[in-house]
Length: 493
Ligand code: NAD
Image (cartoon, rainbow, N blue to C red):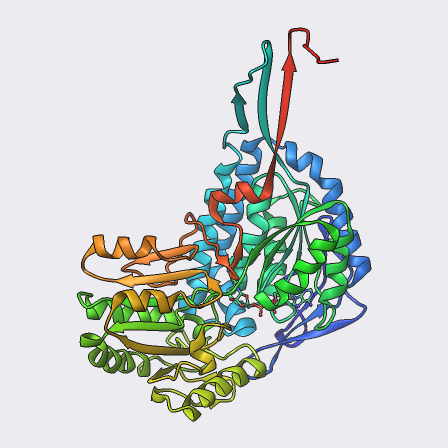
């Protein structure tokens, strides 16, 4: 399979199971460009049979993959990183036409993906356990870290290319085999292209598998993952709404889950902040990928003396961002993923305006191209400012504060806890505030979106649990305790 080799330039894709592409044919579903609904691919509409075959292949491949020498695994990951870089231009185009990603966002993902592959290449050499002290004479005790088995992954459509690597790579680097179910909105960049890359790199058959499904069929595939005894962990990246549904299922089947969910991601700009740096960090943090990233900034609290200048200059910067077809390398703001996403933003902006908010810039849609939007004077009960529900699009609320302690308290009045930022020239003050944020990630003088492959991403509260980077060893391995006694035991009876 090659991603763009179907009729009329669109791809025809199948599932990747046990080291082979399944025969095309059977039911398919269309994958469309969010900009103009042009056909990008006809993807295979899989279900229970394909999911079962993929899980069986991953289970069969597990013992050999788990026992592969770290050096052999390392070579494969390094080859995959080179292939990702070699295919940069093709991947940039794929992410633009399938997911509406600007060049800035797709190249950001490609860099992170290659970096993560190269880091994961060394993770197989991490210590495999610890020797422990025992109080029993003559007893030796030790723990060994073992991979879990098959890890089944759900990938989202946004940031799909990088996040699918995170879903495959982290478990595989620690010796697990994988089955991925990409989002039906972007199955190519959320899993299928990864299968091509891993296959070319020479990963063994069955070590990774991809099953795609039509809209509305996710649940049948998910059922197979939850019900199969071979699947020992579900690695989910997506919305807290879906996580609640899957979490209940995990409870019924007593499956371990890793959850990477949404966020509300506040920024606090203190009165001594560098205003130019703050404007750049907020424009990037709020509007990268037109606000459709889990770590996008949703609300900015600005010290009152800086507020008016900050808002005016931020608005100028944001108005200058080019909106349009993301295959144009100068475009920063591409289309939202679908009509539902446009509807969500439009409704929330209108709700805030109806309650008396001030529109600083944006607020209009042209098809699925929604202008980056800034609101101020937003009443506390407007949906977009309550922090109770993630607004997944290019909408930023800015609010002035007089007391930084009140800003810190208000910024945390949300069920989410993914990322936060503080802008200040006083690093000690910033660090002090950072330590009091109840989030998985907090930055001083960087955007809420500041991401690096080596740094652990993950949330608290409704933003999920589990961490990426090499901390993922906690999520994708388990510890086995072993003892060995060399003296006769003493027993009470
Ligand atoms: P989503 O929850 O709609 O879908 C995620 C995955 O779950 C997809 O594979 C989808 O097919 C599947 N799914 C959806 N409904 C299902 C059901 N009923 N049964 C089984 N599977 C189902 O999320 P999305 O719209 O694809 O992604 C956007 C969301 O993901 C946002 O909330 C965003 O904040 C979050 N996200 C979080 C991170 C992170 O690292 N914390 C990264 C990216 C995205």
